[in-house]
Length: 424
Image (cartoon, rainbow, N blue to C red):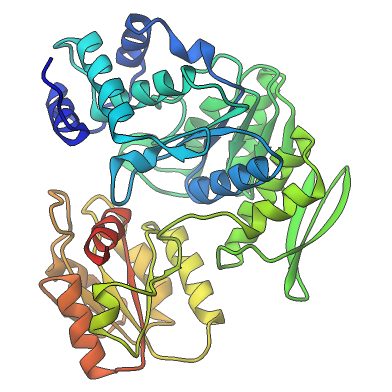
């Protein structure tokens, strides 16, 4: 076969199934069987589901395990700038050569049979993980849990369910209880499950599923606690109390994510130094990430420029809470969202803390909400709104109007990825 770049192979994979999302495991099982069932050969798996905080929690678990001297595979989605970000082999992003080879192998094994892009690329990640020695494999669910392509591990070492909120209702259900049931689909018989803060309805469903499967539950507020205290954070479980620095990922919601990560790490037996590294050394781009260099910074040298990829109502609340803690400074939003999201629910909490919103369409994204529609909703929730043809144009306009302001680019991980690529 003629050597091809991973981008070319990924483009071919997009044509294998007409739907981007089609929740079933049948196609995944078929391809994994054709590949020799690599899911049975993975290093111990920690499987992570939830609506908010999956990626941050995974990043903190990885930082803690690596500080304890462990080699860690990690799978996450979506990527921001490059697909390679989804697959981390024993601590390092997968190389272009390795990615192209594993994608080609999966494409050949699948033949011309229907399979979604996420399914076949998840199979590729699993195959890559099975062939590289490591101590742990961290698998982040893409959507839901029960029928997600990652849900093929018969006996993970642990499962984690981060906070569940309303999102993807067209696929997962229109109530917290229904969505929690889908997330709880990753729970396996006898396997400990760490559960982050949940609504009463959501927790009841998760605990019921765990009880049927005799899976021990380590739940926030019952078996572990995490809270800010005197500019630091405290974590407590049955092992004892940890007094730690605040997470380096900003926002009080990251203390809850850190708590879930610490509950996992303590169950695995890592020491206190590794627990501290989990909260101080985790890296997770586009989660209230401060941009410091690049072309966008050059357009607004006096501004405070931030990037965040949160995109549902719970993320809007968390983001508003973070902004409220920052030094007093006018905050202007540059926002682009997908047309599948609850834009009003996302923007309402932000209207309390932002001076204006400039709406953009997400470049190269077929499912973008048009900038005009985003601006209209912003006006409806009480924000002064305008539109711009690009993020760069919006930054330039806002810098001219309010040179020393805070500018937050937000609304979608797809927009965040475009920004990171543009800003180099």
